[in-house]
Image (cartoon, rainbow, N blue to C red; front, side, top):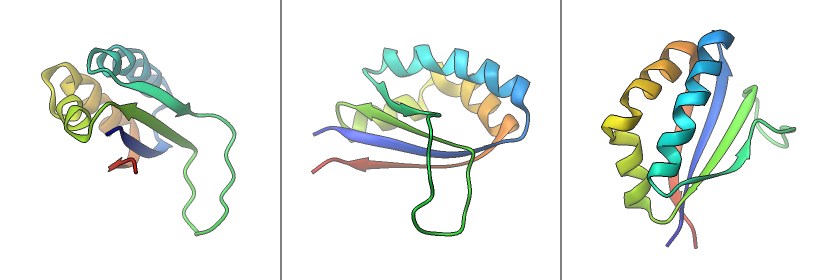
Length: 95
């Protein structure tokens, strides 16, 4: 069953965040993931939190998504993301 990683992002260091994006892309593909939405136009329909970017990734399973997130391949990009942006990230299985 597919799983989706949903990331809400507030960028604090745009230069470093651009480097993160370049490094992260290959790690996602290596774990059979793909971008579903990535930084496109968005509008808040409900709620009061605002994030500049929302990214949605699709993986074949919840386990594969968690393997990616915990992987050695994603370790450095994850650190770069954490240093260059405030984020919230969840993973959810599809129905």
